[in-house]
Structures are given as structure tokens and as C-alpha cells.
Image (cartoon, rainbow, N blue to C red):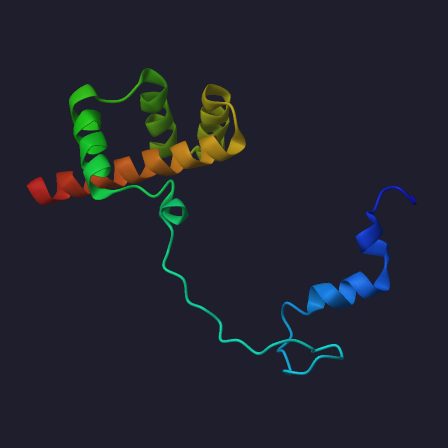
Length: 126
């Protein structure tokens, strides 16, 4: 369809211009690799680049709350399903409770890690 792609996607000269970003500049004024030669700057990471990364303090607080409060009923059922090896059923339950496939997978993994942690703690205590 003529209108499905933008004008820049159809015109051949625009694709050449787009490739210039990856091509090394020759330091001359004409040609495909025209342009002033510059050294690539290494920028310091911006605070926005660590968005969503869990800090040590927040992780410790969440662990403490999990220890004090315990698990929700659906989480307990999820752990039981994982213990008997019904991973797919556990994912379906988590998906239904949390709304999306991605959240369900994350919760299933989290509960699996919790079971492994509890098992390791039980082994070391005995």
C-alpha cells in the first residue's frame, strides 16, 4: 500500500543517509562517507538508565516484609503446584491472578526461588 510506509522509507537517498550513522566519516565534503571526523564520546550513565533496578536497601526491606507478613493464599497454592512439578498449571494460576503472561512468569520464578531458599535453609539447619 502506498500510504502504509512513510516517504522516507521509500526514497533511496534516505536509506543512504541513515547508513551514515554507522559508517566512518572520511573527513571530506562529498561522497557517501562525507563529514567531519570526530572521536566517539563516552558519556556517564544517566540516572534514568538504572530505572527499575532493585537497590540493596529496598530488596532488604521487601525481604523483611515477606518474612513478617508471609505469602498470599494464591502464592501458597502456587508454591504447592511448583513442589509437585505442575509448572504449567502454576503459570496459568499466576497469569489469572496477576493479569499478564509476563507477570505470571515472573511470579512463578519468584516463588520457585523462595521454595529453593526455604529448602536450602532447611538443609543447613538440620
